[in-house]
Image (tube, rainbow, N blue to C red; front, side, top):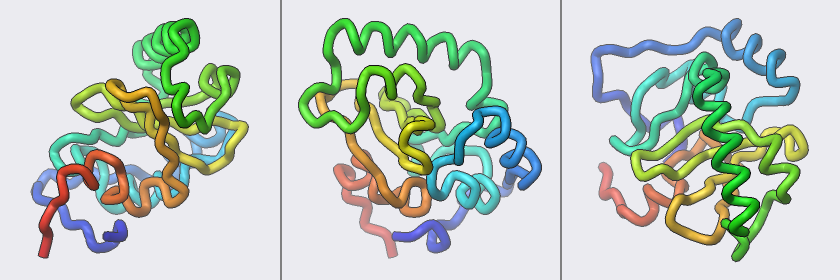
Length: 152
């Protein structure tokens, strides 16, 4: 199901402006993941499928989130996490930025070395997932496939 077929179930619809997204891209110094702009400018802040929270630009740049990510990467590299199907090297992981997070602790990241691409780093699995269409088709995310939503 593509992004334009998704509907909001909340009357509190707070989208993100193009200027905020441009500023985030300039601050990061690399292109945002595919569909991130469209997702936030159409759907805005909130939870997708009641499980995945796509961070707004301020959430992506939040110093607490960035500091936590540094610790996660350090531990992941030390314990060789996500070694089964690995799309990102240790150095790419260290440069990655978290754009979304699931309630279970799965992280959705992008990195400057692989412009526009989105990757999922599951908390409870030793493999990574790659989403070439990124946020444009969030129903392709592993969580959504496993739940097998029966939508009209």
